[in-house]
Image 1 (cartoon, rainbow, N blue to C red):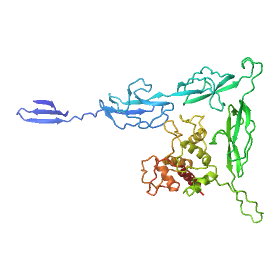
Image 2 (image 1 turned 180 degrees about the vertical axis):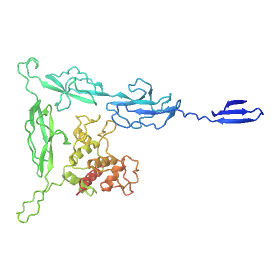
Image 3 (image 1 turned 180 degrees about the horizontal axis):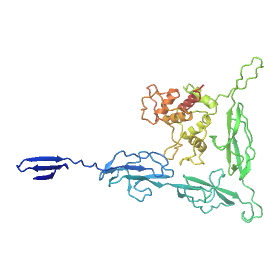
Image 4 (image 1 turned 120 degrees about the horizontal axis):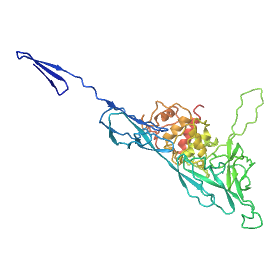
Length: 470
């Protein structure tokens, strides 16, 4: 006689009894199959930067999954991250960070959801009727507003910059950031547009003045509206060579006589390049030449006895840095990020290494736009979340990174500071400059990476960087 039972662990027990009543027990162990396990994957779904989260766990059917946040800082140009969805087109189930769901016997892919950004298109009517702003989605064309009016003028279209060079095309141009368009006006000269009078309206004229920045004085020009200046006067300044006229005091936007037009009273600013002394090779047979005048030394009123005086004034003599109109340098003031960009393009020659990506807070009309974009295209600056933060103070850590990239120095080194752990984002940049003694710490061995860099500290770092191979 025999009988079979199933134990709780899934094994089988066979009991065999012979005719004499003797029993023998035989146990059969059956290996249970391992349960299926499933994965969770995150997909950027059009992201243009950052890293997708990685879930290294595997889950059994019915297990609970906690949804990741955007820890890898995924970004997509023109969009804002808006959670995750089980379908790439957003038609599935949506989850936010730390939401949970249960595995249902299958692998799961969660796709990043993106909400299109909306930007403001403003209209500067330049004395005409006010034109309302528009809110436009990223990469979408705007609707042409009703043309504004201005007594005595005919509207000549909307332009992308105050110089009225590039006209906005409402059927082709798309919005990629907050923008301002500028109205162009053409003065009416006919009697019909002059209130019925018989005499034509004389053309409107504007004054162009010249700030020679230490050069000889020049008379103002009276120029008819919308006129190109085919010729401009050339000033002189002892010890310097004239470097052209600029729209702005910061000398970042040159006046182009082939394109720029006079549409309002304007001041042009002279750029000067200090003459340097060339030292000829020794030749005992030649007659010595008269020495050329040495480069003028720039001095500031507030640097007497200052530890960085010589280095600051040397850079100023080279035209790399400037002081204030009152003759002061203000060495202990912090330096703004847009001023940093201007000084760097004076000190270095940068080649574009990547396509231009505009910053939402530095429009083409910004006085330092060209300087900032030169650094961006050279791979020196990237900004944060689409912003450059031009008016923020530059930190010492940011300065270290920018200098390292500008000098094309390999990040990393063994010289460290007490207040910069190896996990700090600037560690390798600061260490590289410390190896070359371009940056130094304080007497306590601290670098203070997150403090604003002062104008004196900035100048000294620049001086050491520019002279490290000399």
